Amino acid sequence: MSGTRHRSSRAAMALASSPWLLVATGVVVMVMLLVVALAASRGREPETARPADLPATMALPDLPSSPPSRAPVALPAPGAPQLTPRRSDAPPGPTPSGRPASSAAGRDARPESPPPPSPVTGRYRVMEAWDDGFIGEVLLTNAAAGPRPWTVRLVLPAGSRVASSWVEGAPQGTSRTSDGVFTYTSGVDLDGGASVALRFHLEHDGENTRPSECAVDGAACAGL
Image 1 (tube, rainbow, N blue to C red):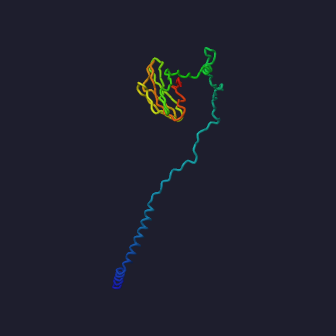
Image 2 (tube, rainbow, N blue to C red; image 1 turned 135 degrees about the vertical axis):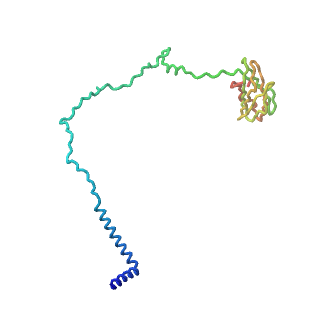
Image 3 (cartoon, helix red, strand yellow; image 1 turned 90 degrees about the vertical axis):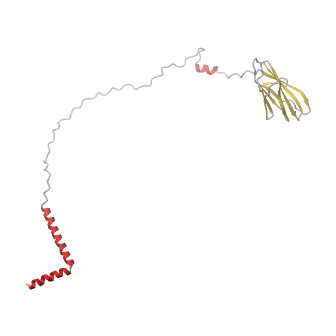
């Protein structure tokens, strides 16, 4: 009896002196219990229900012994090809003169006639002359019944120039000289049946003292 107590005390002292041995023993015991629990749970699993067996064969519907008849289909009869309708309007007929309208219009077309000449005319003259110049005049006359504007154009000789110009006893107009051409435009219209004088002072250094051209509204002046 004393021997057994000595062995138990020694075992307790060995366990107390080796705590890792106690931990390992506990782990082994827990693993064994886990294995036993898993084995018991697998033994209690119900069997999986299996689907009912399908019949080996299935009855198929009876098929007709002969193919179904087909009803004849009526096809449309071929028709005549579609044609483009012709024009129903008649071609252009002849004009009263017997010629087609297009040719008559082309032959009768004539160029427009030039505008009628201006009723304002001019007469050129030299009023006073000296060695290096003179005073010239263009007398303007309106043959129309109503007032008309006017324009005088002088082509000056080489080496000459218009020093001054003016309308005698009437409102003044505008003048300009470009490339040896002197142009004067009326400031007011000239009354019907009336006359007015455009005068100018022309200086020159050559022998030719007369303008080579004088015109009123495009018509040549008299007296040049």
